[in-house]
Length: 192
Image (cartoon, rainbow, N blue to C red; front, side, top):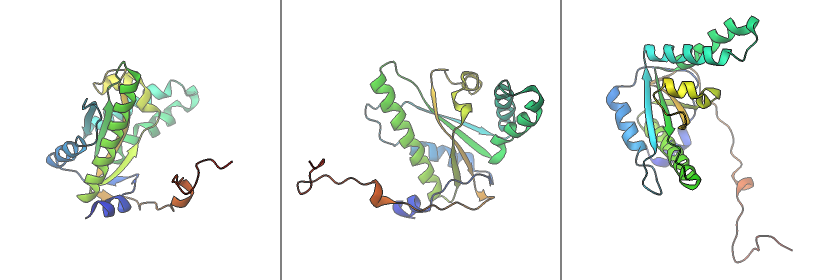
């Protein structure tokens, strides 16, 4: 598979089955760390969640989030939220530390996002299906603590991963010409 083929064929899959071998996960993470990183800070962290740990994370998150739900609706809410980490056999929480210098913190967040994309494309090349998720859970300091992260860390992605898709990838058209602004010698940027 060429890089262009991996980019064009990669899609988020919401529900996935099929275990990904530990060695493969390690290799994907190693490839992710080859992403561009301006100051060579290597700010990223990868928390791999499999097996019963997914259930513990789901239950913990659901109970945290349920505190904001009307009491009558809490049980159903908890049941639904607790199932979310079970949509794939492997979850990789990709986080970045937050530097005190805002410029470095922004660069580190961008580098970690590039690491996520690199991981997704490497997985696509190996026939592994993925989904990049976030949601309210990624902002909760107690969830970060549960994952062994510092509350100041930023979770960039929760990558759902498996070898068998349980649903079809959704295709969407791209409107490339509408998002390009060409600046050149021939055309002024802002005509008067």
